[in-house]
Amino acid sequence: MDESALIRRFFDGLGKARTDVVLGIGDDAAVLAVPEGHELVVTTDVLAAGVHFPNSTRPEDVGHKSLAVNLSDLAAMGAEPAWATLNLSLPQVEPRWLEGFSSGFSGIANEFGVQLVGGDTIRAPLSIGVQLCGFVPKGQTIRRSGAKPGDGIYVTGTLGDAALGLLAAQGKLQPTDGQTPYLRQRFERPMPRVQVGCALRGLASAAIDISDGLAADLERVLSLSDVGAEIDLGALPLSPAYTARLQHGIDRELAATHGDDYELCLTVPPDHEIRARKIVDGLSVGYTRIGVIESEPGLRVRDHHGELCRFASRGFDHFRSQRQG
Ligand code: ADP
Ligand code: MG
Image (cartoon, rainbow, N blue to C red; front, side):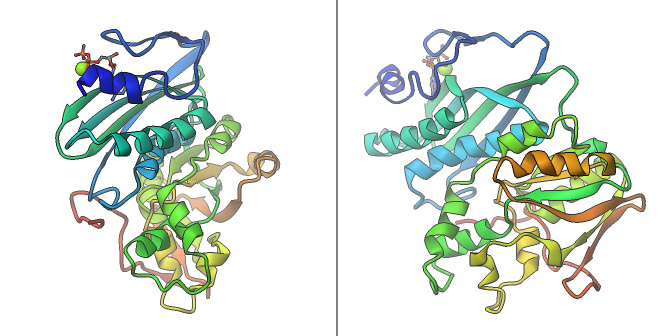
């Protein structure tokens, strides 16, 4: 199969057919119409085999995740997703793998109204680079730099499930109670909180998506906002599957530091907290207050007994360590 046959078979027309795509796949570049009164928001993330996903990951899950992680970034900006491009490095053309990848990608693209409008395909070790564009009404992006002392700190969903899902995928978790499929799903098919991010435009003062661990990602918000924070480990939202393992060598620190959950961490000024909660309650996504922004720099963490504590581990950093083989 040559390159253009491969593109036609697996990528042409993937996702939702959008009316704002003036010209999609097939020309030298795509042509896209940003709606009047909006700003373009652009993000990109690369997933490499053996670094971001174990080599044994199902192609459907790789396709899903490669778009999901980008959707999560747009969610954290409060942006509506619209157009994606896909840079694919393939060691060889394996139709079964490509079919799976394309079906995982198109499933989540359709769900979030995204159209694939271009890309590039080369032969090299497996990696997937997705660029995602979306838009927001002018001046309304939620930035990392907007947190102010007194703002409540919130997270969506539950934390730590992806950490346990990775352990399960590596065969390092006792499959005690039938919850392994749930945990693996949370690791392999994260659900970006796009609706929450968009709904909290104009209410949240800052937001970030939790890819590298709550502690590390919240610290990014703190340093860009020139503030500090105190959070309460006992308040972290944990799933029943995670809670069940608290007595079995799994602690709350893992949920606060591992990452891969792709939940949002948001700060909300006191004046907006009630309205924000009402809005998110209508979206059937968990939304939990875990702490407060303070003027003193640094992140202070209270354990579930109320004592100040320190984490032994830090969030993930590509240039410090490798964690998935
Ligand atoms: P060029 O050599 O001019 O860059 P290509 O042959 O690479 O053209 O691509 C032809 C068309 O197919 C372009 O519109 C490009 O955006 C699209 N395309 C290439 N690879 C992919 C891919 N992996 N996913 C989506 N579109 C792709
Ligand atoms: Mg090209």
